[in-house]
Image (cartoon, rainbow, N blue to C red; front, side, top):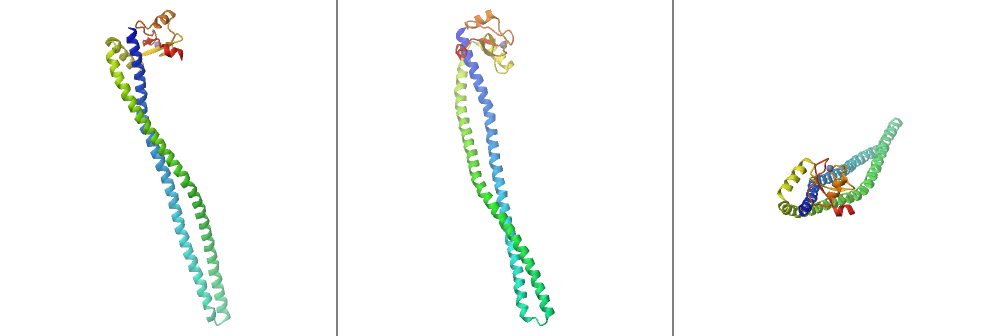
Length: 239
Ligand SMILES: [Zn+2]
């Protein structure tokens, strides 16, 4: 019996490991998706900032053209100075030139404001470009790490599954069936160790005499509370 209990104990540990890997299998692709989304979001954000810069450059060009147009008007009016004949005409032309100059100076101010905004945005973008490169690289590295872990997990899965198949045939059939039934009913755990006179499945104390018997690992003993098969794990107790 001892040998079968030991094989079953190994099997229980394998089952828990396989269950953990299954959990990871579901988790890893989600983590990768999350990293993909994060990368795309950052790319999208910087793309929008670049678009904003482009549109500001357009505004700047428009304003500069408007400024040229105003300056042109001033020049033309000034050119007409030699043609004026009366003081009234002269005053009218002066006032016209003044109006054009005011308009030009307003546009000039607007050009300067846009240029300031462009400078700020350019500075911000050059900083963001560096940040985003690091961020994307980190996300890429993290994805690679996850993929490597996935590959490792699959290798471990294969190895443990093969060992499980072997053990399943070696453990006494009746014991194996009992284990599987318990495992299904008790959250994947059909066999538990006993430590400090306590069942490690339900954490209820086992009677002292039973504890003594369990430590021999000579016969099938089940927890009086949760019904799981009890095992004395010498290595576990030392830890
Ligand atoms: Zn128990």
